[in-house]
Image (cartoon, rainbow, N blue to C red; front, top):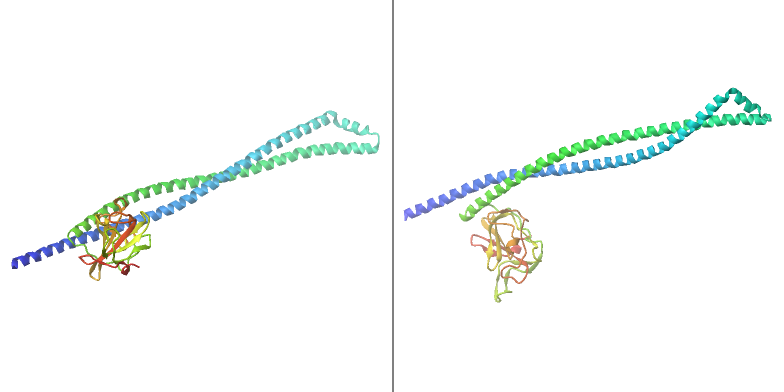
Length: 360
């Protein structure tokens, strides 16, 4: 008898030691996972900031390109006007040269003859004034066109200067955009590496959890507070307690609550915990069981039933967060329509209790 008791103590100590070793290993892996997730968050934040800066750069490039198109149009209009001005300038230049040549050919005598042939002093003054005005007008028109051409050339130079400035802005923005694009590419590569590491660490935690589940050593404190509503639907179609069974008939205990909803309405984890079961079940269709830790020293579980296998997003050993999407409403198993059968169970024997007492 003493030997049996000793053997029992050794077995208990061994199991306890194994459980502690797994728990310590899990804590270490969780710390590594948290570091990976922190690094992921930092990179995502950097990528969001880069995306915002790249958007601003694209806006700058578009604005500069738009401004250059506008400048090009204005330059084209000025060049078109300058062509007309040059033609007029050449016309008056030729006219002015012709008049000068004629005056030169006629000489002062020609001038005098033209004036002296006047029949009256009034005609003399009129001819004199006409000659003066014609010469003045030709000279004025020619130089007006010269000034106008010079003014347009100045405008063109200013516009081309502005265009060069816009080209510099575009080149600078494009260079910065390429650098940011390269930086984003590197960060995305790093993010992909971290996501792969995250999957590896999550698989390690799942493996440890499975060992703890199999050895009945999974234990941690409940996170506290009331549980969250387990579905996107709020419509309770059947409450906890005795009722007439809708499928088999007869007056029997209903160990949970039914929440009606359309097919694939999201089902959420009522609290953080570890998935201990995710399997087919004759009556439940598909059953997901989550262990949420010990509340006041008593194990606390939630059950989710009637989903179809293709709706299920979790497997045994997975750690889930409160409000995490774990499945969808279905009508698998003993069911008369799409709904979530939700249970809260306590203790090692899994005694069903009224879920409404635990939900907020």
